Image 1 (cartoon, rainbow over the protein chains, first blue to last red):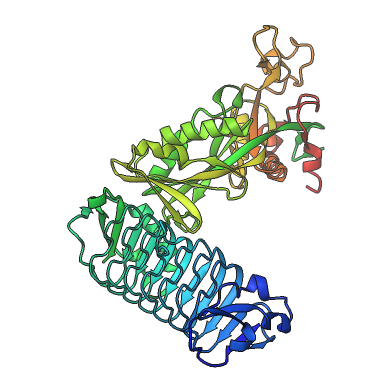
Image 2: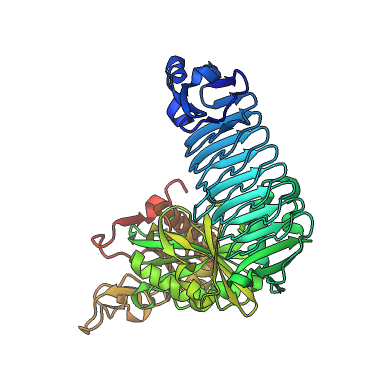
Length: 266
Length: 301
């Protein structure tokens, strides 16, 4: 199923419920009648998108969807491809399946994601892989890959899964991290890993400014590093040669009695 | 049925269902991986008194191990999943956790989970950390040489225990040569272990005893020193040494393949080398569901 945006909507569009597991298999006419939020009213999909039944196993969006929020929200299987940028909350609360965004993503991408894969070819906004406003836990499973840069608070309160940024990450990356793995291919902003409890944050690019509440630990963790680096290396790019690089490991954040690790690949 | 002068008895080995798991042990180098593997599979010849039967399956190239270090795979067999769990916990805790530089991983993916690092992690006294990598949970326990990495669990599978061969030879030299060659041939195969010392057992047993307290006693029918003395000796005066090889395997086909490889090795030595007969132990076929008939194994040879 291919959905081509007719024109940039004047108001924000809420695409929750427009999911492959729900729509693939329906007739085009039925899909056209599915209602989505636009501003403060509900409109049929056909008012915003031209529908084409020429892709059977994938839900493909085309156009500038930067005003379309909650793409893949609570998605539980199947595949979504977006040829263009997307709005906020892309892949939020998704538990399975895959979303390919061939553009930028807004804020809160993959927030509270529990499984599946969200790949963003461009940049991601703030709070990617983090908790929803008011939420206690951030991303809790699955994989988020941002090929460009990420905004601030990347992985805030994240507790499981893998979140990778090929480029730079903003301030407070991995803040309040509960567990899980974050890898940054470029540089990061100020105060990385503030309030981190557990989990691993790998810096494959620029050396970050490590807070004094982290303890440099020189013990041999070669076995664990080989397991993790080999897994991350499959993503290629700045992570491809990780397993062959020496590491410097800092444990913290001691300010919150944290046992997380900040790993700098040399 | 005679090959190269070696008579293949018209009998069968009787084997039993068991529960098994495979562990992959890695270390800084192959020597330390072997130290851990030998220790973890020590005193594990028979479930009668050891709790489990265990042995080294094979050495693993760094390419085959999860962490890219040299490794050894071991197989452990027990009469129940519960007993296997106890044995794995004790043996990994005392023999692998303690061995410098080692890490331990599940060697079987599919099956009921059996705790590996799940309980051992508490050795970390609160400093242990868990890590999910590619869907597998690992535990990292701080130890004096760095950290001990263990997979959360391994898997239990159904298995076959008690496949066996009896090698009847002219004298001790010939029996040892045949047994060594047969074990060497079997060790080239995967999915099987020979749990006795050097893979060989000389104290084959029968069920029961004249002493009420003993469930098993010496297999008089195959003791050369009792020829003419016991009621039904299986030997004649030419046989002066009998050795047995016990085989535990993951599947029936694995045990059968190992038995065939063992018989072939004995046949290669032949009567000229002092191997006179190859037999097998059974209990009349009523106790174990798996029957390995020697002549069927040799069909087509």
